[in-house]
Image 1 (cartoon, rainbow, N blue to C red):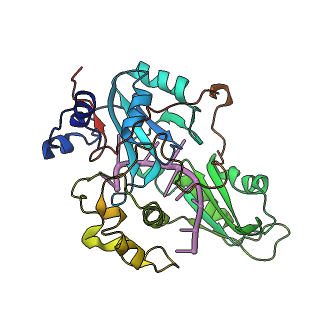
Image 2 (image 1 turned 60 degrees about the vertical axis):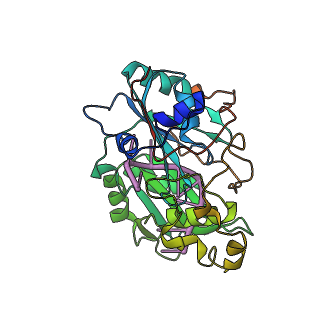
Length: 319
DNA sequence: CGTGAGCGG
């Protein structure tokens, strides 16, 4: 988390012990109505830290809290986060000035965060047995009648580049997702032979991706999360054999402790480090990105890194 | 099994 002591350490060179008290204070707890101050930032570059997120968004106004969501054990970023401003005006200014901004290899999206509720859970669909000649437009036409598609992705064969008949479609609400399942699951698309399967996407890919990335990169940006100082529980996860299909546990041990437990990430390699494995293309924004807000400027996030502390930034009213 | 990352690990 990016808490006050991190700031003091950074700016004044102090080495404050990170207290448990500080860590617990840093959790986001909307005491009242944050619907006009609280923003969700999507499509963050993989290496972006809370400190960098803070540095980018504090240019607009005073930040109450700020957090990058990441895998608890490995610190691997999920690519989105939250910024809660003190003032509603500043939140709106942030949307108007930072949405669509190119940051490293991503165009971030800045919008109001919705209050947590069941309506916005399970909105991602996993679709199989699609025709092998499926196109983006066709997928869109199949699924957009049930709601606005927030994001979609047709999986392609790595070698041939041809669709594998598998895709993801994300809606804004689970009602839309359920409607799509009810209407489309088991149906046979025009010109196809087999019925498609449409179901809620289980989110177990997260942990796997984090596991694999942590393995490959050999570091973690979670510099000691709450209780996480030792990496995966019991040296578990990572140490046991490496990524699927590679069984290379010896490499891990050869490094004397290994990435996730060893702990001190090297996120300060300027601009998020260029060596993280990246997908061949940028994200496919399923609409919603605003062309009128695209900036051609490239944000330079402070050149310094250092993974944050245990869990977000919290404005303790020191200014 | 299944991506990249859209709602507080």
